[in-house]
Length: 586
Image (spheres, one colour):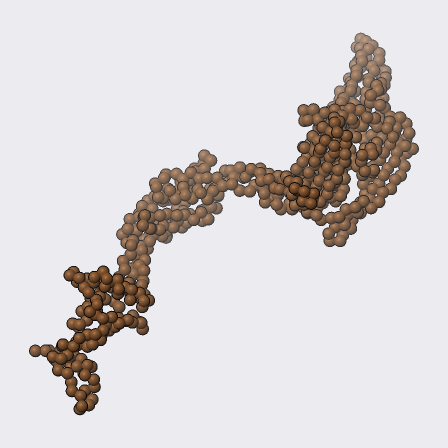
């Protein structure tokens, strides 16, 4: 006999199947036996406001009470079409907090329970109370985390033990400890199918490492420049920066892998790697100079096969690539030094006292004159220069310079906001000096005047006008002074260094020693050697008196300084053969 509740359900089901019999006398209610024999035609599966209908007879369970594979697959597809929410599980993790590695607890997820759904649909005939259609909500089951709290705690304990107070690191023979308070916060711990993994963010430890080892590494070398010629006349030359040796500091980013190994592989010490950086005068410095284009060039020619050409080519080689930084100056004598055979120079013509003689390094004034003119049109300043005392037609009249050692000197300075690259090119028949920078001024020669100096010399003044890109105009002048070979400005003949000039000095034991020397009145002043030794005759000596005079120096651009001192001893007279002159190079 049915229970009262059962009877109510059967009654209601019958009402549903038979229509609205309770509300009218024309319909008759189904009997309880008819309700129990009713067949369930459809099951509606719902999730939120989405649903699908399924014939419960198509849902099959195996002998184990679980849905068959086909049933499970079919239900899974239908459920997926409902866009059922799936909440992924969160695995247990490890983070560095409050001075140590701690566990972040796992959080289980949630997913549709296809097995429970299949069973609910398959058993719906028994629970439908004779209804032809019932509704089933999609059931859910927990989705467990792949990494449990216990797994995470076990590895966190390992990391805390290995980290301790910090990681021992070493470089360049120095060993120090990178504190746990630095390493820990920079460390990320993850887990995948292969196990736990530790990674350290280098950006978080870069500066602390550098502070640990501030004195290790190298300064690096200076970047330089080269000029690559264009492939045709229409293709301009190109300035190329040549990086110098890199500077090194602590530490390269690859060092972080070694620090990680102290946590993962029980390495006791992490050996760090040097990092290459741009030095103080490296590529970045070179780029900031703005040396990008040809701003001035000048050429002079010479006859092939002369020995002087060797000197011109040598000084061009030594100065190719010189950079004058903004506001800085360039002294040719200071840079090249004394011209010597050991430094690659050979004897060639030099002007001494207005006469041509051979000396080591002769001829390099042609390079200086070419450099002078390139500097003139590049808008540079002339700090020190001197023209030839004799004019040579291979040079621009009044716009040229010479050099010797240690004087006259040649020095220019860079008033521009950009670097100046000097690039000489010497061939068998001529010398060209190019200057590269960023164009900032237009230059032209705008005038030239002459005036007499004495009876035999001419002073030439050349006007230069510089027009800057902002419209500012500046006018200045350079000068040269010429004479005839062997003739001073006063018209007198000068001493030929190829001849011997002697002066006699009589030694009076009761008087001071007097030395008379003939010099070129138009040559630059040369100071006598203050350390020269003078020996005064001893009136009590027998018959021999020796007097040493300060040696006379022949100033030579080639690198040799010729000193001539001849001392003759006798009972009453000392004769000194002295040459006092200054050489310049033609």
